[in-house]
Amino acid sequence: MIAFLIKRLYHALLVMFVISIIAFAIQDNLGDPIQQMVGQSVPESEREALREELGLNDPFLVQYLRFAGNAVQFDFGYSYTFNQPTTEVIMRHLPATLELVAASTFLIIALSVPIGVYSAIRPRAWLTRFFMGVSIVGISIPVFLTAIVLIQIFAIGVSVTPFPADTGWGAWLNDLLSTDGGMPAYGRGDPVNVFGTWDSNFASLNGLTYLVLPAVSLASIMLPLFIRLIRAEMLEVLQSEYVKFARAKGISLRRIYFIHALKNTMLPVITVGGVQIGTLVAYTILTETVFQWPGMGLMFLNAIQRSDVPLIVTYLMIVGLIFVITNTLVDLIYGLVNPTVKLTGKPA
Image (cartoon, rainbow, N blue to C red; front, side):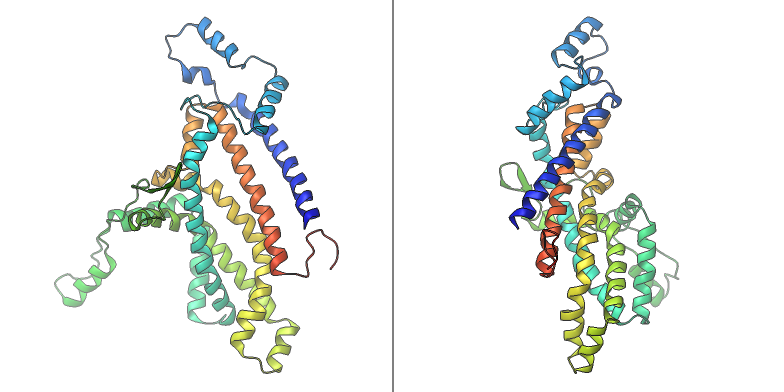
């Protein structure tokens, strides 16, 4: 385990080094930060003085070495927009993004596992065909369109009148298909402060209502993929020899499905799914923009619009670090689920 952690730490440092070079190299193409910091009436001499003060005229290698030396101390500079250390700005927006990803992950796991298992056990059932059809549609619809539809249905409301309203059955069907809306779909509301800069929507019922629509929208990206992945792996496991042998021994189907088969089904799901869950952090940009959720994604777009280079670079570094941590945790969980797998890569 210690050897594995040392190896993963080496890989993490190498990945973060590459990410830092890429993030720092593209800063010249993100616009002129001086133009965003001062007004149009400021003379060019003052602009050059400010550029010299910020070190923007230094060679690339000098700027990168200065950045890398500060980054080791977790100092990524000051945000031009907020006039605060970029780490403070990130930490102020990070809780909202992590809570959104956590809620979406919970929905994905809670729905994909039972649906995927059922679809494998009952492959010809009409409910299975319904799930598979919906999953295909879900994969094809972009997240921002899902978010807009959810806002229209559950926040604004829709009035459906295809049936004759002057009849009892027609009025009942119209009411059944119509929605009153009213669900919150803008911002986080009033989250409860847990400690420091961590304001949590999980700490109150009102906060959870603000989290529902963004979480469902974000979960819609990965949920169809997980359902189909679990179904495919479960079908393959159910055709294996040891499952046939377990049936021949008279072991109950419930135990075969949920103890023997499901555990082996989850091995590739953890490998693929863990990486996919990490990508939800990147997908929050669209979700947070539609719902104006004050997380890192919305902050990142605002930073791009204002050419806030230090904040953009810090965001890329933090997201890269989240991916590295996620991949490491996936490897650890994989080893716990399947003890025959040696984390060091040596045969068991």
